[in-house]
Amino acid sequence: MAAPGLFISFEGIDGAGKSTHIDALAAAFRAAGRQVTLTREPGGTPLAEKIRALALHEPMDALTEALLMFAARRDHLRQVIVPALARGDVVLCDRFTDATFAYQGGGRGFDWQSLSILELLAQDAPALGADFVQKTLLQPDLTLWFDIPPAVAAERLAGARVPDRFESQPVAFFDAVRAGYARRAQAEPQRFARINADQPREAVADEVRAALDGRGWL
Ligand SMILES: Nc1ncnc2c1ncn2[C@@H]1O[C@H](COP(=O)(O)OP(=O)(O)O)[C@@H](O)[C@H]1O
Ligand SMILES: Cc1cn([C@H]2C[C@H](O)[C@@H](COP(=O)(O)OP(=O)(O)O)O2)c(=O)[nH]c1=O
Image 1 (tube, rainbow, N blue to C red):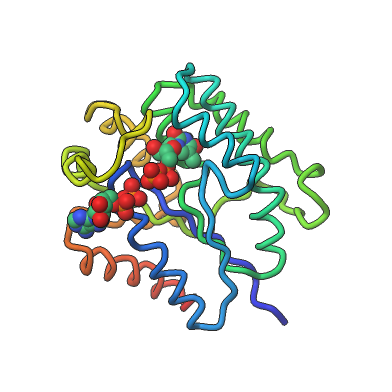
Image 2 (cartoon, rainbow, N blue to C red):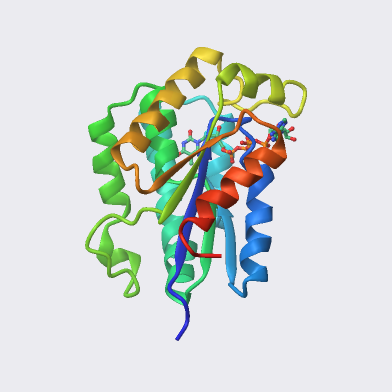
């Protein structure tokens, strides 16, 4: 029988260094004989990638931003995440719903309760397809939260790439995003593994591996 699907998300403020570790984890799962679906939010489908381009570059208010994030997520769930989990894949997702709570909730100050309602709507079960038989919200089995002081992340990003609408925000915005992640982690401590991202790459990689080792998936 195929192994059950596994859903792992990667979170943290911009410049925390999460992208650096996703490929390594994908390689480790493939070496263990698992089929890996590597994807990201906002994005992961042709439609959601178009929404991503809008959300990252066009001016808009916090509600529009939140609605776009959930619209992209719904398409991504329907087209990619739910089918991949049904096949038994390991789904490695660069950001998921926690990012909306952290950025639109924490960073932009959008109401947390309203985001919960949008989260439910975006996962409206019957329309997600026959494979989607969850009675509760689909959440990652594990969320690796790359936590880092915003000033350190900003230093890493300086000069590394042209900043988008989020990356160009001041440190105070990322303090609020970081607090949003902390709130999510506190609410679901079993799902979250906090990784101290303010360390050399090798030390961060060791913490990522330790978070996985404890769960017996590799
Ligand atoms: N542990 C680390 N120490 C120093 N620089 C790092 C570390 N991890 C990543 N970086 C660098 O910081 C920048 C942001 O990393 P990236 O993985 O793109 O972050 P994210 O995907 O979280 O926004 C990149 O230039 C990357 O090479
Ligand atoms: C998924 C998601 C991302 N975002 C933001 C966070 C990031 O600044 C941006 C894109 O994330 P990311 O892919 O990490 O950016 P990059 O490839 O430049 O490292 O979108 C939200 O504000 N809300 C969300 O729900």
